[in-house]
Image 1 (tube, rainbow, N blue to C red):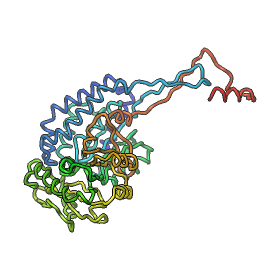
Image 2 (cartoon, helix red, strand yellow; image 1 turned 45 degrees about the vertical axis):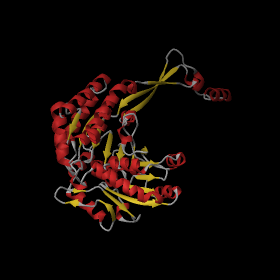
Image 3 (tube, rainbow, N blue to C red; image 1 turned 135 degrees about the horizontal axis):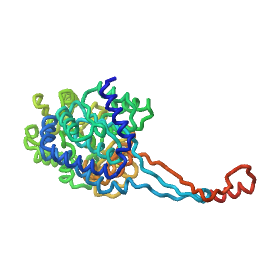
Image 4 (cartoon, rainbow, N blue to C red; image 1 turned 60 degrees about the vertical axis):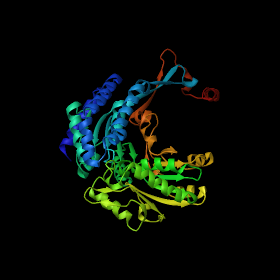
Length: 457
């Protein structure tokens, strides 16, 4: 075991047990400081994310820094109310007494963040844990090495390491950190690694939040304006070069609309990314390993447009596939790249059955003007969250929770649910001393039993 990790853990534990994080005003001050520090370090973070993922400044702010800032602002606005003890009713049988639910921070939190949104997916859960009064050890991904390094420098220079500490490293660091006893583990990544995290947490019976992903479907029916659907779908799919956990993973479209959609989707994509592979707004694949995996998924596929790959820049052109075999490798794993397989359906029920036959997705998107179709999707399919007539943007609403279900994850955060995730609700009944009704004490008889039944109704 790394002695440095043990020392960090022990220092955090002592700091938390001192009660230093309990004051809500101090939590707010830390959040305001985080917001100001993020603004101060924005140029360096922008540069780092360009090096790691090739993100443009606009996209980096829109999908990373801006979301974190909005989340902190929302939390600051509501935190006092969220943290306030809640008074609840008490049965007459316990008269005279009062009952309250107290909001207590869980304690030491390990946040393990991914490489695809290395700022947003690190700092949003971190801010939620701080709002709840926890101490946080943040372990960013080794793949987004430049952002990880800047985050480490930023927190080391601006925050008490007993409250927030960033640790860099790879697989070995992850394994050693998971051996320590945490009060909550928050992990964002693949389902396979999520299983490892959950197994490690089970050794200490540590609660976990798992944000995992999966194959998020899109449905387009015949009632939709194809040009608008194509534009919104292309934006959500090719954002961050498709490396988004809630990116549309495959398309189910009414077979009668297929040809019109193909034309509109290519038109919208080429307008957003002129030259496709040469577009300055197209991000790059994170590393050679994932680049080669995506190239392998393209083999044997029928390409409508795109499909070009640049081994030097690790870029893959925005790509649409057609006549995709549901049993092909590209339909068996989350794509996590700028490739959209297109499948057709004859009846809407057929599309619903196709989705039901697969793992529960993290997100689902339907483009339709037909209220019956929209209601059928929302009421009969199980998925983490999604949009009607748009993609991805539900994740950016700081008033709504975000999380998966089944194999796409467990637990949620954002909005009040982020505060709740890292908070223990402690129920306390306070009994008065001025009266002690003897009904509950032995010896018991039928009269007392009948009275107790009356009181407990």
